[in-house]
Every structure is written in C-alpha cells, then in structure tokens.
Length: 234
Image 1 (cartoon, rainbow, N blue to C red):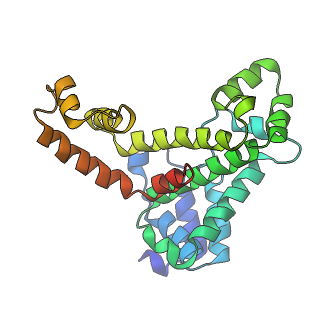
Image 2: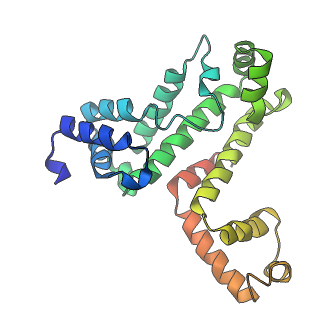
C-alpha cells in the first residue's frame, strides 16, 4: 500500500513517474499519495518534495516563454512559489478531500499560477517592467495574449482568466460536437430550436439538444478548477 511507504520513497517514485513523456504510461498513485500527505495531512516535509517535483511541470501556461516574466522584482520561481503557497493555504487539511485524483489538482495548480501572474500584470508598473526587459521582437511574442495598456487594470486579469476558462472547457469537452453545442448555448445564446435548425444533422430535435446540454452542464459544473476560474470573473 502506498500509504505505508516512506515519504522519501514516495517522492522518488513520483519523480520517476512524472519524468515519463507519455501520459498513458504514468502511474499517478505515488504522486497523489505524496500530495495527499503534503496537503491533506499538512506534512511540510512532503510539501517540499511536491514543490521540487512539480514546480517546472505546471509552470507552462498562456505565454510561450514564461521566462520573459523574470524581471528585477519577481523571478519565474517567485511566481511559482507564490502560486504554490496560495494553493497550499487554500487546500490544506480537509479542503483537500474534494480531490480524488492527481489530474484535477494539477489543473488547479495551473489556474493558480495563471491568476498569480495575471494579478501582477494588473499594475501598469508590472507591465512596463516586463516590456522593458525584452527586445522589440520578443516583446511582440510575449505580449501577444496580454491585454492592451488601456485595459491593464482589473480587466487584464479577467481577460487572462477568460482565456484559461476557454482552455479548461476545451479540455473538459474533448468531443467536437459537445464543444459546438456549448458554443451555441453559452457564446451564441441560441435557443434549442435555433440549434436544431442549424445542426439538424447532429441533433434531430430539441429534446436531443436538451439532454446533451444537461450532460455537458453537469460535467463542467463539477470541475473545481473551472469553478475557481469562473469565480475570478464575478
């Protein structure tokens, strides 16, 4: 049983599994038990192992080159540490019981990191520091998904969070028809009748649309990382 293994052995096995390039060949049980001890049991020794293993794995998000954000005041590792401790403080103890597997927890880490950087970018000083640390070509690439200066207040964070909402929904809805239906309902605000008129070759009648929408809504509303993202848009 993994709960009888020493923390050092768990960390070693977790690191080995995490280093595998093919997701299907990974065995997450060791990492999940390590994370459970760190968060659920508030084991600081296990927490140190978790941070060392995952600080690079979950740091890739909406910018192509995260190291463009390494400025005088905050380094990439600073962003990671701040986000990690926010997740820890939010989920330690019984709050961790809402997670039963590793994948949604790592997604939650990603959300926290995104929001940490977004919060930093809310200040025009932060945006200016990032821009000045790059040459013109690099700045164009890195700022591709950052809102314009006139929107660098609270709107900046919301724009970035919206991008993460879109990515999370795409992950939760791997089926192309499900994504299409969600787009019709949530973005285009189409009625069931209008959806049938436009896509009768997929959904024969309004009842088929209703049943599919109910399934989609149940699936996405039960996702903790998505709920956390959406709370940032309120």
